[in-house]
Image (cartoon, rainbow, N blue to C red; front, top):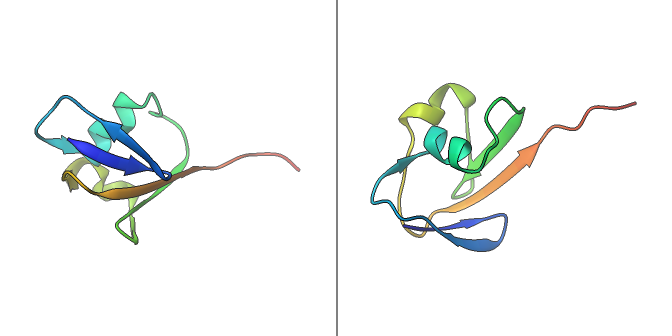
Length: 67
């Protein structure tokens, strides 16, 4: 499966992948994230049920604390 993540093409050696599985594969579990898939924000509550497909365009942004 090929996905574009933050403007960079990435290949994954699987046929099926959910957004939650992608977060684990990218070692981002437990981080505060906002993810946009093909131009639409995906609520965190839907990560586990959102399937990804070859060609999907993703933007992943992490929250940064500070003041």
